[in-house]
Image (tube, rainbow, N blue to C red; front, side, top):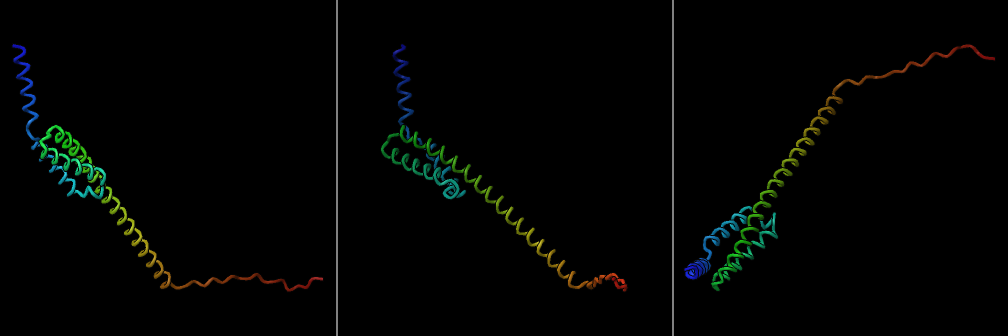
Amino acid sequence: MSRFLAILAMLALLSSCAKPPLQKLDAAEYMLKRAQLMHAGEFAPTEYQAAHTALNDARRAIEKTDYREADDSLDFSLQHSRRAVKLAAEGKARRIAEEAARRKAEEQARQEAIKAEEAKKRAAASPKKIIVKKTPKLNQRSYP
């Protein structure tokens, strides 16, 4: 009886490995497409390329019916696609923050230039004060 159960377990294990990992393939393709849409090729080129290569490897393994290799490649692709999506999101956020800081600095510089121009105009329009220094009178006595 135990021999029968062992054979049955072995058959179940082998039959589960004999199916192509199509659900994982769909997930890996989705994640890679998501990474592409987030411009991961720009923000995380190494991760994106690794995910793309692993997905292609998985497709070739599925064609050869090497489903175990395909499953491993799909795991690798999913891992790198997720990392690429994360890095792309961080890169986009950083770019947005840098752009906002640049715009803020430009606006401050523009406001300072306007204030300086206004001060210059006020200075030109106000009457100039003439400062006259009084010189002390010299004593008219002659000294021997």
